[in-house]
Image 1 (cartoon, rainbow, N blue to C red):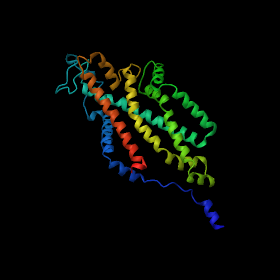
Image 2 (spheres, helix red, strand yellow):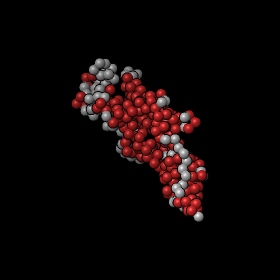
Image 3 (cartoon, rainbow, N blue to C red):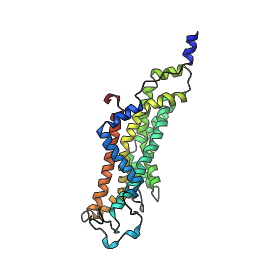
Image 4 (cartoon, rainbow, N blue to C red):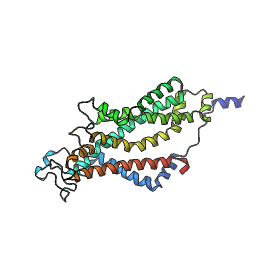
Length: 298
């Protein structure tokens, strides 16, 4: 009788997991993670604290000299000047901020949407799963960039917020499918079944057992996709449906350089270089995180 009582009062067994400290130590031993992480950290610091890299405000037109407009790179202007005679180095440094903000905001929003909807559909199944799955199918039928273009055309003025909204609307279904698949695998494991037998609530099971053990694929997916969001924002701005002036962004700089690229290639080269390195850094960081979280590689 005592044994039966102990069985009903004992906590549900949990899957053994590798300690977070062990995972972090393993990541820090990987050169690719260290290199990519250092690049990502540098880019984030540049976006948050651009004044650490330049003492020129990108919006301070008083420091622009039309007499030196479109000047080539020199000691006084490392990246040359733009069409208004403004220091192009400062413009490129400040151009990182909207791209990084949009990338992080869209990734965070779609991660939360995918976490909630994927957990619900994967654990509950039934009509909830059918409804969300059909909605995902509809969204998959709309091309990501084309859908964002259509939504952005509805706004007279396009800001960081509107671009984030447009990209978030069409970027979440893939994450929901990933999370749903992971949850469906976890919910059939023994420790989840044991929690059900002990009459634990569905919310407790999902929060305590399912999400912590199913969220890794979603984390990897979103980390890998962050660079793609940054590239998508730059692409939308480049074709004229993204951010509007007076915003300062790499996409706007690339768009302005189109007509001057033959005579003044530096206008295209520097923002393109920074954009490429940023996307590469986040993709490399995502791959390093994926390899570090994969038990087969540890």
